[in-house]
Image (cartoon, rainbow, N blue to C red; front, side, top):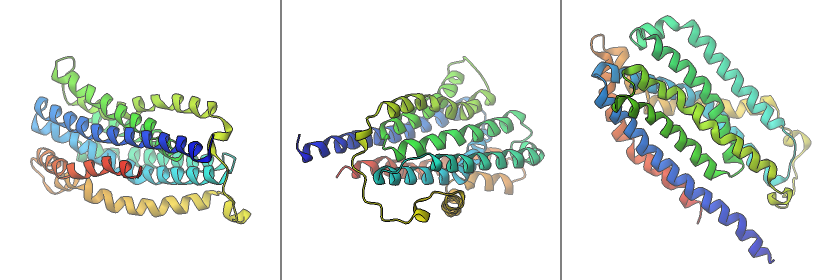
Length: 300
């Protein structure tokens, strides 16, 4: 087999995976829109506003805390695969950072239970505990995303985010058809979604273990010094810290609106937060389409 034919196989697989990821992200956006549409039609304005506040709080926290580790892991795995480096120290470092961030969140959230439960969620203990569960489950979900992206498992990455959205919307559908009822049932989908999405992980690990050692290709020459090649906790934390600062700025703009409305409105703030969320949901639709189209451009 010629060298060009051998190279065509990985490129074709990469292209298929990128296309599946594009479709997965695009469909995920539509399914997420359906989740909030069903919630808005089945819940009162105040209850729906509580769900949007929960969503905003969860995704600000998980994006700020966990996406840096996702980026760190995907970048490091891809770089090490290309260079032919072995070992699992990068996984241990990333897992240590992720677990530390999850533990930090749990400590802070438990210490601030009063302000969160009574102030943010209007006294709803269910919304408070759903937030705790969702944020902790997303620690594992974002770690899996970084692992899949680093190993170019874009098809499984797309399946992960799609399963997350489908499992979440199933709770809203259950309320809409009368199987369940109320704000709590809709909100539980936010906590269940990252847990169900992890069902792709065993499949990903089996495929990784069965992959032939030669599939990674010839390693590139590594002219780095041992100190540069070593992946340490300090090095990983430095990269994650820089991304964390970027994510704070991004999430303040993308998801901070409903929380700001709730904080500044004494009466009817929860219902107004739901309205503000709907406005932002429509405004972010082009961004979702852009995210879906980006992986396709990598095929060229």
